[in-house]
Amino acid sequence: MSLSASTCLRRLLSGVAILLAVLLPSAASADCGRCKEIAEKFAREEGFNGTVLVAQEGHAIYTGAFGIADAEAKTPMAPRTRFEAGSISKWITAIVTMRLVEQGRLALDEPISTYLPDYRPDTGHKLTLRWLMSHSSGVPNQVDAAVKADPSLKLKSLDNATAVRAYASGDLAFEPGTDWDYSHSNWLIVKAIVERVGGRPYPELVRTLLTEPLQLHDSGVFVGDSADAPGMAKGYQSLLPTATPRHNPVPDFMMSAGGYYTSVGDLQRLMDALFDNRILSPATVATLTEVIRPTQSYALGGRVKTLQVAGKPRKVAWEYGSNGAFRMLAWRVLEDGHSVVLANNSSFDHMRIGDLAAALLDASYDGPSPHDRPDPVPTSIKTP
Image (cartoon, rainbow, N blue to C red; front, side):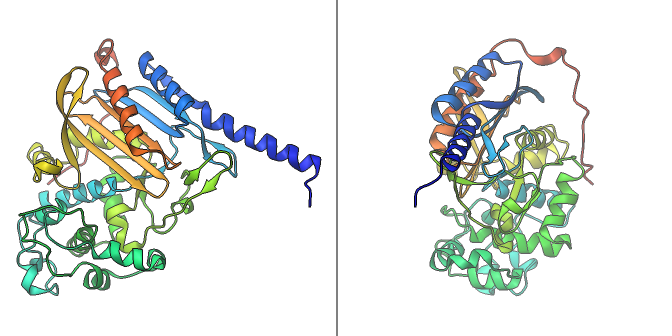
């Protein structure tokens, strides 16, 4: 059956609208002219669909929003559009855990059997939060294997005890602290510990310990399909020639490993608060960012790498997350706070996102420092 002329015209106009939204910035501001040029050229030539923020010393010097957040509703990207953070969620969990450590309620090197007495005793006395959060525990990645065997598991709800027993209690692949394996099962155990010690569900701990006191209004924890959270970008396998949705739901027992959502602005504010010691003490931040597995540049819940930035080797807090169609990247130079945050919802090549981040971070060193701007109003978390 052939389509009517009016139907063809509507589809053509819809495709043109999506194309324009993908290629053109929907919102942008800049004090870094080269950042603006780099981002707009990349979006135009590479089809980058997402948001960008570049900052110096706590001040945004460039923000940009490119493309479309919701193809069906024709919603353009905006600086406050929310994205799944993927594995940056692990870094968030590590920060929450370190808040409890500072309160004296947890210890990084205490056997986990102290907090989970029902965990299998032969390995529970060997495992610690430090080994779990650095992927140095030897706990095998049973949860990923289970999800691959039964994708419907992503839609199920399990309590901590059941999830840990089923997917995070296998025989150790190596002695804790002797090797490295990126195992999502580690984070089922971490979630169970912080909920038991914190006395609240994980989303409430994130809210009360981080997002609420820091006034991160575009951040939180989701379960299932992130599209159900207000203000979220929808995920796409591709946007051209037609928008093809891509869904990768996060079950409740995996929320500490991949269930955080945020905007580029909120993630930048979180980094500022963390490294300005408004969340954790300097000593605790040093522990959080101490590299435990040098070959992987892995610390607790995230990485710290030495990158060549603006012609010099600089130590960078390096966070990257991916889930389904979503990509999120956050880099911060530790010595001076220059940073870049990127988010994408169209399954973009993660290596190319790294290229964009490197170019923008280099460009952030052009021109004068923003010392003459008024200081942002600090939002702090008081630590006992």
